[in-house]
Image (cartoon, rainbow, N blue to C red; front, side, top):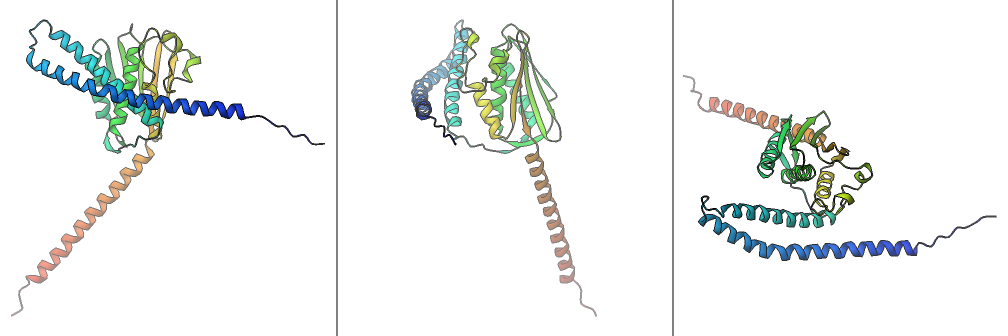
Length: 284
């Protein structure tokens, strides 16, 4: 005798529908919020720039302008993260890829971060002098987010180490801090959108967008990402990118260059023969 097992999945489907609707409403709210914040911030920034031109550094309140500038930049980054998070979640971000020097990218990121986070010493080890194909702007965003995250969660430590490495298949970048560390139970969800570790919510600001943006950009580059951490000793966030596509691109470019050289050489030979025949003196 056979048995048929029936399962009522209507409640599960209803819950899934609610989650989808909630996510859509959240994204709509973020879009509206981002737009509403941009307009007054643009005005504030314009007024601030005017003040910077008329207030000299000798004035005692010039330091207030520098602090205001810092907070304006923070708001701009927050709005940009809100927009990027929504677009990435909706699959609306398209990479603009080109070949570039990855070593120069690392050096630029570290130099910019050191200017912003002057209380930390950010060192770059093995900048991997290699050219790759990718979206330079987005990869710069990835490294910047990882550095910002490392600085935020290592207030008692002053050192950060950015390290590059590569093999025949991948290039890898790691950002190591010596801060509070992360409990193993929280690591699996770190790269989720808007996820915040419970015990750090009160102590550290943020909306849980930076690592989500990192993960989505690396996914779009067909790469991998992760974190190794120990409570009280710090964390090392890393990502890797495949070199295979880059190698194929490099080989194609070499082939094209070879064809150009061969074509140029053939053209010179033909022209040389034509010149010789054209100017040949008639026999007496």
